[in-house]
Length: 395
Length: 209
Image (cartoon, rainbow over the protein chains, first blue to last red):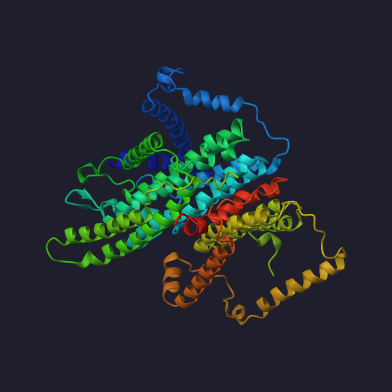
């Protein structure tokens, strides 16, 4: 079991030992990056087919079913098609920036994976400030969106880029604030040590952060803000096809479009992996008697579950309006994340309570506080009449 | 004095990227290109910090400058004018330019080299003790007043921005801007970006009663 858990680490060490000494450093780097890219590129391919199938199922149609058995080879066909498609660049476009934009999105998206712990001892680089690295690199995707929208010389592209930047900047605030609660309770920005902090078991049950009042609300807030940060439905306004064609992707075709597409999915994967690491115990098993199963298995099991949740949400929740989107971020999510910080502090300091039933009292108080804030905010922001429709970005 | 060959090659590469992008940032004609080059300079600086194993400073540099300041610059360029500059420089004479450059550079370098903190540094370079935890403890204990003062200044700046962006006449309630003459890409961007700035203030102030 121990070997199975560490099989990838052992395989890497075995392979590095076979390489001549002067090139060992290169082999170490390549053997860390190579599997990462392979695994998540396949995840991307699998997710596209699963998503199209699931959306088809939700919308009462078949989905792709022509290529290969059950249409399973569809991602392969899509990729091949993208590769051999003509790469159209508008005559007026800023050629250099237009070319660089997809790379400016994909490269940071790959970089974010380097700090995520995929299993026991399976972090590519264990940075002291890994969480900060994740958000610092993730923040540069806004610039890629701007580059794409601006360089296309297309009004719809520019509108999409402006929407995208406004949305990403707004939702970055609740996204980062919801992770601060975890940092506060663990006392570290290093992701492997955040996972270690959740790896204990009490009565056979895990001590994941999601099983605390602040963790539960923080996880939900993180998922909402993360979906918006990754331009994921119902927050996919930057590329709302019913309003602005495809937003900043309008003037992209062929493999550049595929790169953008991949970059967005990689962003979603990275957010999912981060959510698992922060709140769902990373690679730890959900019950103590399963703790001997390989750690990477649990990471990818949780990963699949959260991705399935995102697909489900995409199939069921309608797209927001731009003013609703901004209001939701600034008036609802940000105050709730701040309240969540207070609840996390309360949970931390009430950990010394000794009387019988203290855990229930802590849960009740914490959940009551965050729930009260939720209800109060919801009531305060709710208006019965429909506001006039404002298309702030379409004039 | 160290020879050029003693300097690590990584530093040379980072320095080259930073300097070339900085030169591009001030010499290119298109302002958006200048902004993007400036971003590359910021990234180069962050890489320098990382090279000096100051992890936290490097990541904070990327987070703040690439994630926020660059976007701010880009928004500012699009909001205020066309990306293509038609203004001619103040003076065509290269001598005047050189004089100004030397004056600015001197006024920046002089305090640095005469600073007493430079003499306090140890002769050999130490690994910087810049752990995130240590920085946090310092910020929250020793430097808490400067930190709070900075936060106050930033909040004041933000309130100022909201006040400037707020609509003046109370008659109009809809936050959509008046139609502007849209001639080229530069002024097209005015309308969406203008509402982007307004949207935070107008949704709070000028929504229905």
